[in-house]
Amino acid sequence: MKNVKHAKCVKCGKIYEAVPNLTNCSCGGILDIVYDYSYIKGVLTKETLAARRDNSMWRYRELLPVEESTPNTPLRVGWSPLYQADTLARELGIARLYVKDDGINPTASLKDRASAMAVAKAQEAGAGVIACSSTGNAASSLAGNAAAAGLKTYIFVPSRAPKGKVAQLMTFGATVISVQGSYEDTFELSRQAIDKWGWYNRNAAINPYLSEGKKTVGLEIMEQLDWQVPDYIAISVGDGCTIAGLWKGLKDLYAIGFIDRLPRLISAQAAGCYPINRAIETGADWSPMEENTLADSIAVGVPRNADKALAAIRESNGLTVEVTDGEIMAAQKLLGRTCGVFGEPAGVTGAAGLKKLCGQGKIPADATVVSVVTGNGLKDVANAINACGEPISIPGDMELLLKAFAENGIVVE
Image (cartoon, rainbow, N blue to C red; front, side):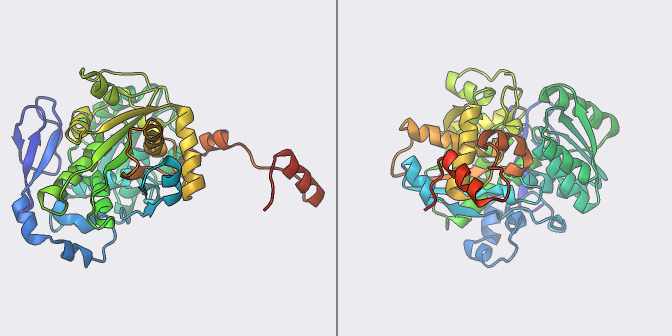
């Protein structure tokens, strides 16, 4: 790869050749992909990018760790819409707000970006089987992207994973193992199985290429804003790979001169499980927490990508915020009512955190903010129905309709 120099351990600094099947450093640290920015500056310009008709994450190939001969993966991943959310901005009391809806990806979450990268690197490695552990979205995204590419998958999920996500897995033909235990139990079993059978490892905290796929959400946000950098970007945080990837993409753009400053990140975690935020707030090392939240995709008590996530928050002078399950579900309704965007609980946690920070006066009134919705609400309809209630149910009778309207305080304008 002409654009990649090597991989480097974020803990000890050891250098590795950027081969397709990279995993963690021998010291246990996570690797980071290091690019040749001088080379990239010579082959990529804003004008070249603007002329491209590939509206997917692969439009940024010069900034991605794939061989020139590696084909784009079959599903169209990325280039999700960035909506200007004026109504919601007014309600929150800030100048400008944009909502990045990554729930429109092929399997309905931002995790498709990482899984598409995993499929590309697995093909470079000559692997026929990919495996991972997941709370749900990484699993379904891997199963879908691998199925489209003709690869077999083994997926490990905790037994609490929502049925909508498990249904996706089964439909995509994955071999699914539902682990009776925590996400940590699930991760450990997947690790042992991957080691035993030599499957290609899609686990985000093991495979350094996964963050490189996720970073494309940041590349898109900047291009869609015509390279005008917002003051803040809010995103939900679980394992830490997504916020780390977002930050890596922003730093890449800064390094090649496409943007002239960097935004501050907002790390939003569930109040029932916030080990990364707690480490930032206390200044201590992160430590495990219980997984007490309905936002299953970010219910990670032992974050495997904590080092990169913590670095991203600190380097960006970022903000941390914890939100209750009630605040998360209120944000789901708020996004739906004001923006027409239906996000799953974990997907709207960034918006919930932004709302809370605005209420606390921590976001300036003249700020420009982007809130990333990381997953679609159809993945977890049970919690949405619990939060919003059931519809009015009556026989087909106009008098009963009028009565129901009156009982529910509905005034027809």
